[in-house]
Image (cartoon, rainbow, N blue to C red):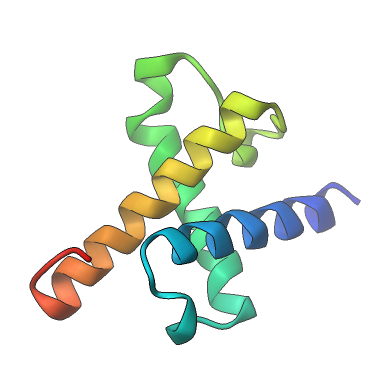
Length: 89
């Protein structure tokens, strides 16, 4: 049951990050889930040690964990935009 919640929350985080980075039209449901989960991994590596909060990948569904995962997903989309277009939107 926990994996289903993890996928849903990852999808919502990926979708919100894609809205922020204006890449929502290019992404589907599966890519939103992937962006949310991979963004949470990135947030766990770089942001979690700085702020002391976990991520959704660590079974932590608190507000700081959701924020760290969201920022990680936005960073991931920014890196992808930088590589694909040469500039971050």
